[in-house]
Length: 441
Image 1 (cartoon, helix red, strand yellow):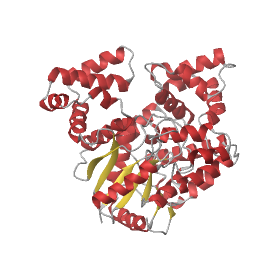
Image 2 (cartoon, helix red, strand yellow):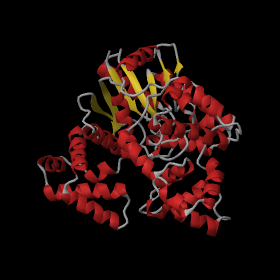
Image 3 (cartoon, rainbow, N blue to C red):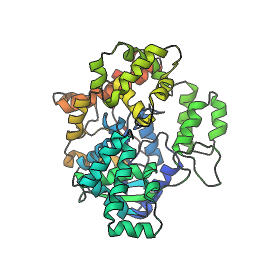
Image 4 (cartoon, rainbow, N blue to C red):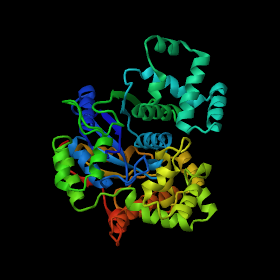
């Protein structure tokens, strides 16, 4: 059996994702089994997912996937490099050889991805010196790193770089394209952890609207981006109006679930977590602020001071994030820092977990083919397979399993409380097994 993998958040699942499934099976064969690695209740942007991980997993199966695995916290809610490293290592831990597919704006230039990945792994002195200089000048890490790579290439001028320039390739544009960045991080992770014999990376052209485009008006045949869909879902108060806006613009199964949750006011947002965030910031000590993940450069301390001085003007999470965001601290990083603080993710503990990688494999949903894959995983996987509550209990003495499992449980409870469900979801989250959908994918 051919096995392919896609790392995605499906927040929400859209036509571009469905196209990827079709394209993978066109390339690899119709009988190809597709595995997804998907974030849980919080996404890589540091925001709550629109639908729960179980619902998103089931929708992915209905749309063509075979097995959806959860990317544990804290990897799911971290910077692109940590997110990619966690996802790639989770796939490797299955013990299966597979083709890994990802979308990229420059999918026709795999050589450039791998050549840049080698620079990021080797960190030559010219690159490293320029990176530190740019960081000291107040640039964000992402901006500083991209400029340092370009500076290194323009100084060294390797043949592949000169050839790309002659062909009109823009390295500045390359680093400004969000799908390119994640694809590059997947390449880095596969090379860094020496997984090339097990995982073969393929780049698919990005389809539809540009990722950062929020417009709901597109050319005929152009699919809406995840950003545009999220914007519509979160900014439309009437469910009937949302149906009019999104009808025909996303898969029917997905739209149905979104409309159901929208009607029941059960779609979480950053702002629905404003009260616990503000309360925790107000009472936190400086040590607690400084130890939290992503809190360097005094990010959380700055947020705390703003709350103390402008508490009446700051109405919600978004207001506070806007005030804290600057050249060095982009919005995504601020949201991830707030999220990590709420979930009590310590920077030192995260560093240890990042070094060790994911500690278990947890299926969220699977098809008939996926059930066969799970049988293979039980034979080949190098990590424990967590499907039922009893599986979690068996491995709780293992520190890494306990820590990552507790984080996922904490995230589910936090989302439940934000939606005014006072009982939380502790029992459901801890006891719920991955769901088998019997229809063939």
